[in-house]
Amino acid sequence: MSKLFLSSGSDITSDISRYFLENDPETWEIMRLVPTLLKKYLVSDLDKDMDILRASYGQAVSNYEAKTQPKSTLLESEMDSIVYSAPVRRLLLHEILNIQVEVRAMESVESLLGKRDRTTRDESGGSKRPSTTKDPTTMATSDIISHLARSTNIEKNIKDEKFSMLDLTNTTELDSRSQTLAEELKRRLKCKLESACTRSEREWLLRFGSSKTQRDVDKVLQQMFALEVYTSTISYIRTAINCLSNLWRSGVLSEHNNEGWLQANLYSQIFDSVFMEQTLWITKRSETLSMTLKTAREGGIDVADRRIDFILMAKDDTIDLLTAEDKAKDSKKVATDLEKTSNIQQLTLYLWRQRLGSQRTELISELEAMACQWTATKLRIYGTRLIGSVFVHYKKAEFKVPMSMKCGEASLALLTVLSLKVYLKT
Image 1 (cartoon, rainbow, N blue to C red):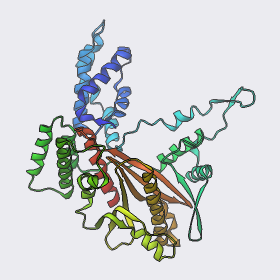
Image 2 (image 1 turned 180 degrees about the vertical axis):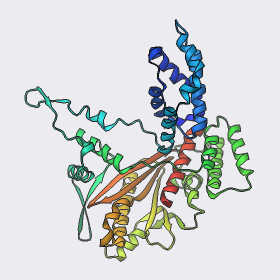
Image 3 (image 1 turned 30 degrees about the vertical axis):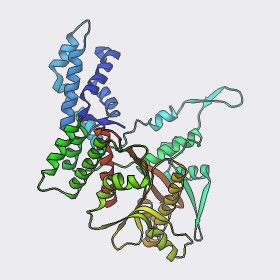
Image 4 (image 1 turned 60 degrees about the vertical axis):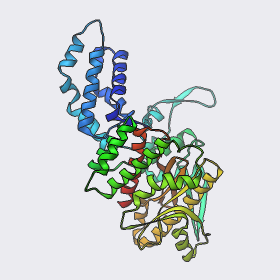
């Protein structure tokens, strides 16, 4: 997981210094360097992160020892115009607007395919011939889904309707072309959860994420508890940081914690509490019956009652908005949980489609059913959509709560939970 840009000055300086050593001074270009840094470090505040970049770049330049110094001297004298240029600001601003909690260094579709006119080896004689494979970026989304659904060949019936199932969470068994198509589809559907928080929330997360010692964390908490006016989300951040601080200080958070202990001491503080003060929502915890399954059964769908560890519902609704299952260890029971929540997601979409009616069926492809899976200290967030007659299932985000004091990682975990709440509200 990427570290916060703001708290990684020395690491960024080292990366820039490495770039200087590996490239001739005449070829140094910050516009080529910044994208590399953005793959490793999480940008969160434009002005502050620009200052960090400028300071790190300046330090790397001053450290650079070359046989001839004019280039280095020139860079130092024009540092502001080099680093604070409009193109660099646009790069960082674009990264902020499109920030992902799980920062990906995914190869582009073009690099996966190679050039469109690349040659392929003839299976019969080993000779090379131009590839006739269709560029996935030019294929219609419906064609990609149809191709992948045929590749997986999984079907499901709900009442008298037949649906196909497309699982994008694990595509390793697909052939290389289908894997490429799967990545293109995930890009088009915007499967990844985008981060979302207010300026105030971001500021507190940055303060916490930049903490290096217990004293630093205590100082952040002291400032937060001194606030006289604050939102429910700031209250959540304070509760979560206080929880993590206590767990780290005591050393009781470990791989040996059982499910009940984790529910009481970690999940309830890090996850459940973010939804508690929303007047439009109801939370249910500890082996509660799924309302989606109950509603489906009342509508004539043959499904059995299933109990869920956590359910989030909108008030006056009869369909689960979000479900979460908990397991203390990664085992076969996790696979059972995932299958159970996936079925609930599919039924949720089916029921939503019925509510929309035949005149607005095209809107169903824009709706998303959500589910989460805790495995010890790791949380994975899944989404499912119904596009045509195909259920498309994918992972939206994941994080792991650190068992020891790693505030940068913990801050990103809290940002993921906040972003999930915002996503559900919209």
